[in-house]
Image 1 (cartoon, rainbow, N blue to C red):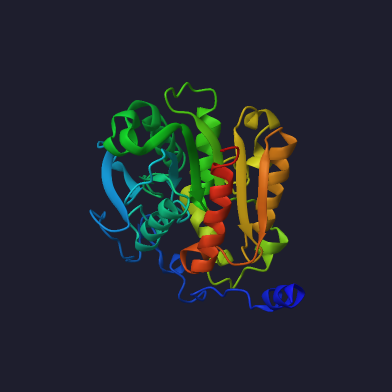
Image 2: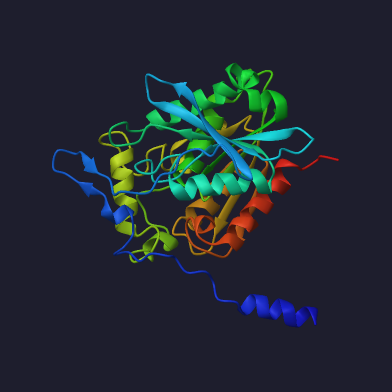
Length: 325
């Protein structure tokens, strides 16, 4: 009976992307001759003052327009919650903490883990090319030390000794660089216990096999992938720059002292080969890595398929609560 169930599960069709290359949101970015862009309209939602998960916006750096959207399960559990600092995806170019599917994902994650989630509203390229997003990510990590202890939700319900830095896609890239740039920084009373890198956005000049076959990918077609890097990287840089290809451009010493990392990925993601190379590089540098790149699905699948979101949140929960009684 168990074998039959497993066989049926194995035979279940893999989830399919909700868009095609032609309807893909990245392909709707208009790049103008002067280098400026027009972004497609994507629905955004306000913070929620009621419901099963509460949310509210708090400023980070008003001069830069950065902020954090905090999420708290409602009612909160009696035990104190870990704090997950989260960076959304979008190729460094589009979306925000308020984008409807990232807002919904953070709500669901806060309830499922459970945790207090702090989602960063950061500056986007090409108006603010890298490393601007990394600078904002570092500022958010410093918020855990400088302002989070005085936040009413964190003070009442959070455990700042159990902070985690997480990101999806380009946000996963940001979470890595936030870890690199803040390692060794005294964050007391906060402490970052781990990095959670979900489908981290990585690149390189030489195509990997999974990239080479992604010309018509519904979520991250090759043309869009190249365009996003051209808009995000410093002027004149190619995809072997350290921001896109750290495994090639950075020395092993760059990752010394990083906390343990969870790397999650999916077999249908054009980035999967890079993610596996990245894991090996981290491990060769002495980083403890929990490798969860065996999942089936496409890029950003957790935003559109509830079962895949539950799968991701289960991996996050296991990683965050590892060692707890």
